Length: 336
Image 1 (cartoon, rainbow, N blue to C red):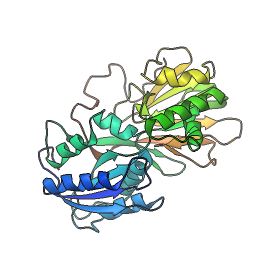
Image 2 (spheres, helix red, strand yellow; image 1 turned 135 degrees about the horizontal axis):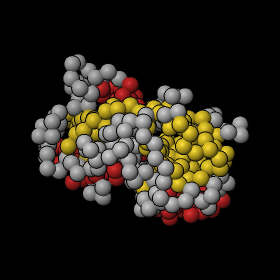
Image 3 (cartoon, rainbow, N blue to C red; image 1 turned 120 degrees about the vertical axis):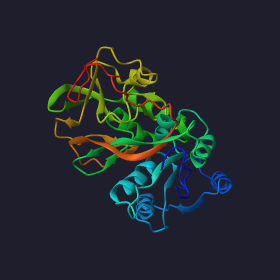
Image 4 (cartoon, helix red, strand yellow; image 1 turned 30 degrees about the vertical axis):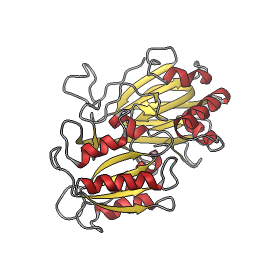
């Protein structure tokens, strides 16, 4: 598929339990497909794992030729869809279906990094009409957690950002307000853990750690620019570490606009393989793509998967360009 070629058949994978999904949203989405003569197959998920299975089925040709998968839900739903698309060889001799995100969750960081604050209806219209001026499909990097095999789209984080997901479960709000409240509450009570972060074999930080975020996307929780230098297709992973000299309660405000780089206690690196560890034998509090992971890991090894998935976004989305990172080679590590 090229930017000037509208999709012919879209499989719409919707998570009805996501924060802002209702029948009106899905009816409007399907109506947009009909107006552009795009055949649409709707799959509603009912349990964890359904979105991954639906994406696998779409990529394997169970619905006939499919050139677009629409993920409707939050960052967790998007993660499942990506797992399905990247685990299944494409049907026939064509490419795997491209992905477009319709945001309907809490943080919606995936949509934000690709489209900004543009209403999803405008973004989807640009995709369905093949408008090269307003939308483009592009191959983006993913990460893989070596210990579990899981793919990572937005990013993975240890420490306070992961703990905020636990806190969010008991907060009776929705959307970004829910995560903002959870992040603030978690940060106010968080105790740094003994950690180490290694980038391509070189230790970036060892000692008390508030968080170590690896990605991927610049945003977490739909509003915190933890990785403001990250680009989506440069073949490298970025990592930001906040060490124990920074009061955890300051982290939400420090990272809101990406102004934390250059501050004392902030470490930033870039590489192909990043290891995040907890050193006291206790489980690592760890999440990826907005999903809190079971407390079974003491280390997480993230490896880059270059150009692993084609995703639609605005043509002006921040991507790497030749020469845009003077001095930052494949093995470069930098601290701020």
